[in-house]
Length: 317
Image (cartoon, rainbow, N blue to C red; front, side):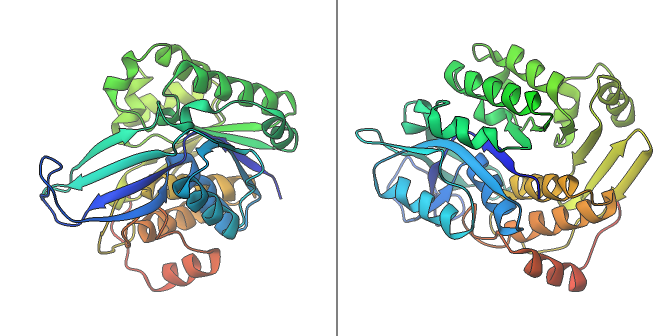
């Protein structure tokens, strides 16, 4: 099977227990939970049986070792996760509002995550990689952007492929080097995985199918528009495939898009049909929201397939 690699932040997530709770006053918290979008992505891919490894950095502390052991236990290649003494592992503190929105207090850029680099271990991992996945949220500094560029170039030079989940807020577009970095990644992308309006960050068209045509015209082979609980739509040069979402009780939405993307890319690499890849991806995304903690809803392929057999679906996207 093809080997999948990602690079970016590892952190722990610590959550408010009560809806409407604020960090402006003391309150009960739960955690720490292993987290970081690239770590969630690689953990889900590994749980599905895909060879998968992560280039990252953590502190030599409990939070860092918690993440490493979780990834190791789920079968991920952790050889390129560097442990830094004297640096703290990244953190995210999260509160939840009644309308479903979330508020985050992050320490990522100034944490060990900001020390990520292409060292000997990362070069060795990339030397065996067939595919690299890039996330817009992970391009939070010039140093991390350089890691992504180097990783893409290394994989492409070996005839490999690239997937790109922009997963980015508009205010991040003004960070130094961000726009250039995003357009560089897009120019190398084979599989593009935007969520809803993210599709229009890179397109002039204001309708979905028009924007997709622009993306396909730029050399991208596959576009998957993620629509949360409403499912997803797959586009390539042969046409359009819609897939419904699965009905579940949402506990925590963090990580659902990362789990969806990991499953879709894994099955795309296996040559699965769009219908099959979308079904497994939607199943992983749905299960991800059923437990508190970004990685706690990650499931094996057998568990996802069993869920799909009995789950209720909505209307196709």
